[in-house]
Amino acid sequence: MNTVSLLLKNVALSILSYLIHLHRHSHLAYRRVPTPQRRSNRLHHVT
Image 1 (tube, rainbow, N blue to C red):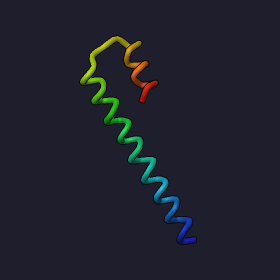
Image 2: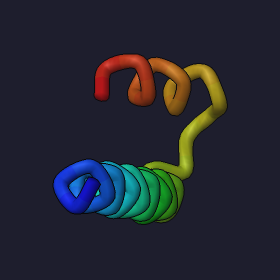
Image 3: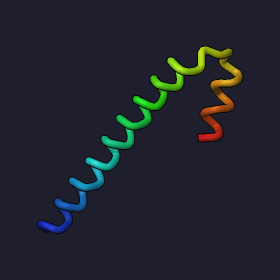
C-alpha cells in the first residue's frame, strides 16, 4: 500500500512539473517569437 501511494504521488508531481514546464515554455515562446500563428503551430509540432 505504501509503495502504491508513493508511486501515485511521484506520478502526480511529475505531471504537475511537466504542465508547469509546458506553461512556462509557451509563455517564453510567445514573448520571444511574435510571429503569425502558422509559424507558432509549426514550432509546437517540432517540440
